[in-house]
Length: 243
Ligand code: L34
Image (tube, rainbow, N blue to C red; front, side, top):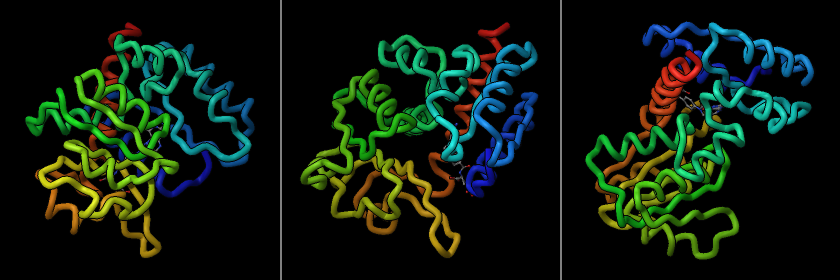
């Protein structure tokens, strides 16, 4: 909804991925001034539409729209973002179908790199509902020792320097610098920040961090594409669940 330029890029990437996977997709690019009622009506229609297995409302939504109300309106069985409270609860108890795409992408990167989470010090910087909080649960399910840091955390560097696995999800360009990283740590950069010169940069200062980390993800070309891959995985699952 609306004309957020970043959302435009992400949604296009999602549509492209669907086409590549052979997943049928529909896009509804609603004008920014569309009412909440109208958006809710569309969600209701898609909830009932048998040929649609998965629904997502790309965030952020304009200010006059209540994000929670919108997320609550999506049928949990079609909630391929896993943002609905029912799915959030299922993740909490470790019994879930849909995994939130970005944290799931982070877990996939860790697994495919041959890194074992069990017993490791995992430090997440950022506590959003979309990344930080579910990321903590997923790492905990893999037996990591998890710390969630945020803007009120005191002595942040003391926490980040203890991390064997450091996940940066604060949304501040180059926030994590090399001196905040334990030598040999695995550094995963969830941030996607657009600088004034239109260049993309992560939450991690890549140049200094790469000298200390044993493994590190770039921005772009790191977690972002994984988010989309995990969305495809959830959508396939949704198609199976919804028959
Ligand atoms: N509902 N809203 C909902 N679900 C989501 O899972 C998202 N997210 C975040 C924003 N809002 C959402 C995304 O889709 C972030 N996000 C996302 C998706 C794709 C990419 C980045 C973020 C991506 O494709 N990143 C590319 C670069 C793209 C560019 O050039 O800007 C990369 O290589 O990182």
